Image (cartoon, rainbow, N blue to C red; front, top):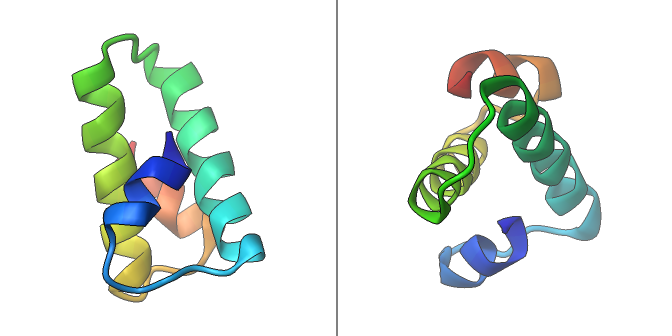
Length: 66
């Protein structure tokens, strides 16, 4: 899910940044038991947007979106 959201983002993320966002996404989906595509897309967008606005620490990003 994260790579498709990144394609829509203005700033390109490198492989390590994509991996970090993907880990956050996977963790939050698991913890919150997110099952709908709409919820997943919203979560992916929030993660990428937060990352691009400077929340680059994995734990902080997770806390922010959870």
